[in-house]
Length: 229
Image (cartoon, rainbow, N blue to C red; front, side, top):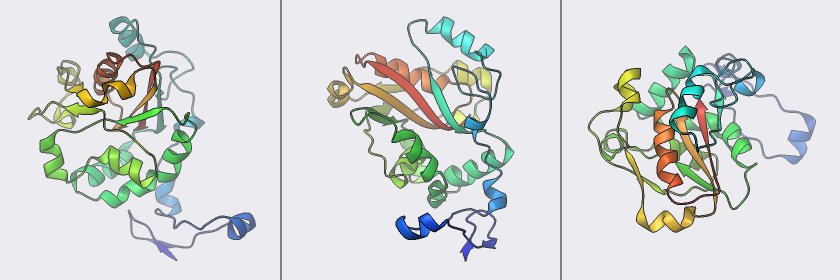
């Protein structure tokens, strides 16, 4: 019997005959009720650009981004919808320092990123030094580690005292470039497929800043992946 990492409810895990015989059993982290609160976006109609729940076309936000970055073939995939439950969960994960909660995403993150070519460079979005000192960890790196994904810290955050999560939409959009590629990592990105990973896609400003920085290194392609949209 397991205990749900979120609500504490005790529950039994069920396994198929094949799983019992051939696969190592992994402890379920959430009870069925809490798992059902995470809405998988792959089961919904999505915007072709940012991956939000939308009819099968480009949303107005993506049309605006295309005008700002006409040479960037933007493609974002997100795992889950950023609903009320997801927001509360991520606040506990990031701001309450409960790093173990990141294990909840391991299965889906691993399944998504293992599809990438073995030569693809996985790059997590960095957080500021100040945020790291407060939280004790970078939430995106924790999720990748817990999923067993190899990544490269190619981007560095130019410290800014303002936290993105505390800004409204207008101020997020006006944020100056917070990232640069570490000099020693420039060669690693040249002529490579690059996947930039972050936890939450809100306005897209952070991801476009990151992609803009990476694009200066001459990769063959850039796409982004987030846990939530």
